[in-house]
Image (cartoon, rainbow, N blue to C red; front, side):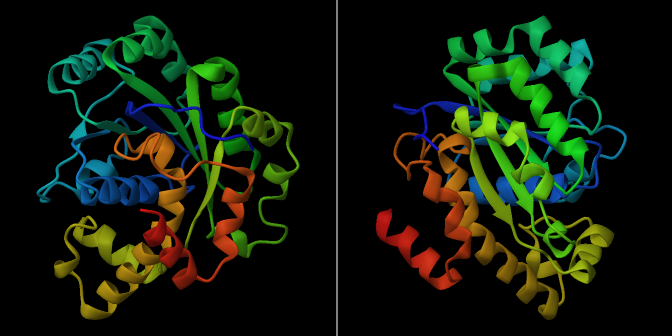
Length: 274
């Protein structure tokens, strides 16, 4: 896998997709938003899944709110572009709804997203959270076919699905992954967060900024999840973080093997390179 294309700092528009839903897309949104904020970046986050706006709801009482914005509606999409031009965030992060890829591509074309992004100093990143089904692969394939080299790509292997037989075999053997590699995509893993802890977060609508609202046992599990996630998010940082863009580790073929290293060694390696 060739090195990341970025050669100078560029702000980011990050669109997080997940096929038909239920892949772990919202959890990855929570994770990404948390690390971007902790990294000191100016982030505007949007939840475009108006039918099930969990990303928005988790941050309803947080000091870092997430705006509810239906990108598929022209009037609301205009609001986003106005925000981008006037507020100039380092990162604009979107939780996109499942099974709306065609509508999203239509809006991208209608507004000329890539031209506007370039004019304002942004680069678009398409993130797809994978399971073991074809729907997430097809979703990414369609987006790559539409965006081509005008966007960067991140594929997230949700390790919840690694517990199944022949995990990610369809993805690993697909022509889509071959094209993903050709487009310098970055492939990472998302560790598993305990289901009971997920339920506690969901019931209380707590974000990762509100761990003090959880029981001590759940706090420990979330902190462990965040610690295991940190090296993986770091690998994707050239495509999701303007602060590290062009400055962080290069996205190479060895990138995807980092997950096999012991966690402590991986964290220490990242610390030494910062």
